[in-house]
Length: 371
Image 1 (cartoon, rainbow, N blue to C red):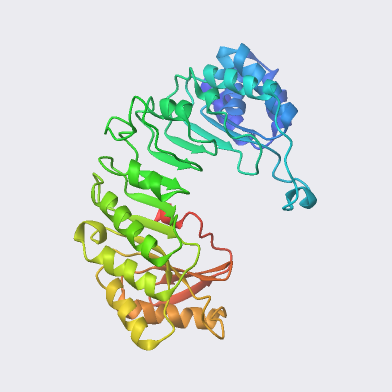
Image 2: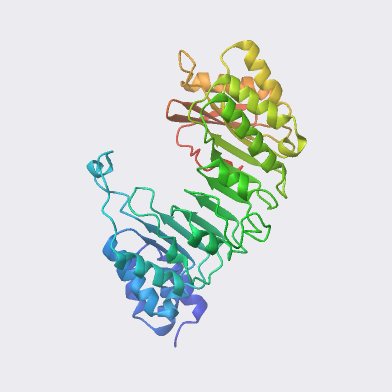
């Protein structure tokens, strides 16, 4: 007597971590094969060149299998490459046309794809957005390391359900459809981009409420103007801002205070803000009080990332971090998480009631998405 499909799916669920067991189950019966294929192909991570080309060929010629793929991540090279290869002098080899053609064929076949990550930040060719041509899937999440060009813009214009977008590149192109129209990415709520120009172009008239970007300029006057342009774009979002993470090439106290002053002067920007970073925590008592005064205008603030690289001695000991957190909590009782940046290291402190707990293993990269 054959097992019912639900039983097969339940058995497969318990052995998902063992690929060899899944392959063996696939030969037991047709019902097991269906359940196993769904588990094997639901999420794919393609790193090695040969594996990527082979897998893409299977997807391109087997629509039944391609329809099972919901999440796909493609890497330019393996993450565990030798350290020598990761040095500054290392130049990754250009991927041949066969690789890109195979990937394009696979993308056209995966019609039910919802999550797509194209990781090519290690270098090499990134002007390959043409591989997205002819794709019919509707993404929810898209991480794109490709160069922004007419192909990428045309593809994004078809993504009516995309809500979470990462862009490594951006440029304003005067093509149809224009990105200025609200019909372009109408569901976008989370935006991460390495150029503030992308935020300025994509935030207005869309429900964007979580943003991670960085200042393009480094001179104070130019950066001040850039801040005003960014703030003006944020005010045009269809939703209240909940998280703002702005990186800078050089952090200083005066500009952090100016940034806070600008944001807190407008209720549409600060009323629902729950995460803000990265700001310089002043050493001097008077400036620190001014800093806390601005934070008191953020009634929903839950998490803040502050830079303490100018402090001497550095407050990186757990006791010092807890003391600073309790001081900040006096002025911002709603804060539950503080990330401290010293040089390139991050230290996370979480508040559990009245107790500040130093979290050695805490991850800070995604706080702006989660808080």
